[in-house]
Length: 147
Image 1 (cartoon, rainbow, N blue to C red):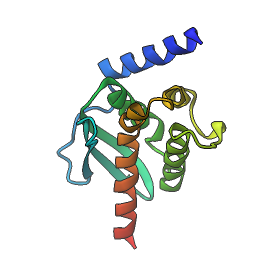
Image 2: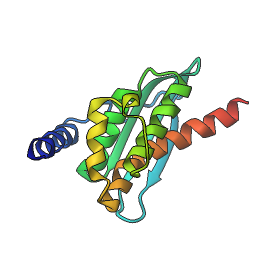
Image 3: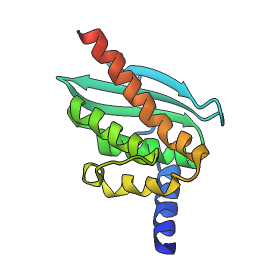
Image 4: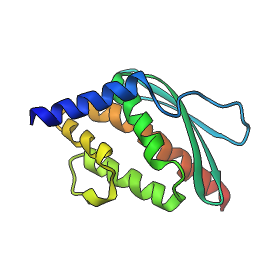
């Protein structure tokens, strides 16, 4: 158990200090959303670019704790370049996992599975899920506009 604790602690620190896909774009083709966790004050500004029903880019900036920023960084790595239906499916699997519900481990990358160790900390679950819920929200809103 100590080795697992060290693994997720190291992963969170790495992605907090060196977040991937960090920074917002001035490109007008990006779709924007800003969400806030009212319980702790974490906030995320998220941008996505969709082309041919594929999530081709994710950018973000956070004013948030290390866990939220690491979650956004890992999300941006593991969901970029996926087809939109696959992206929404992975988001759903991730949110189900961190809410301590039954999920299919094979649907999530190993790095993402480390977040399951926070399920007993409801305050942290909100931090972890903030980027994922923002992404889910902006994709669903965009899909409604497309039809």
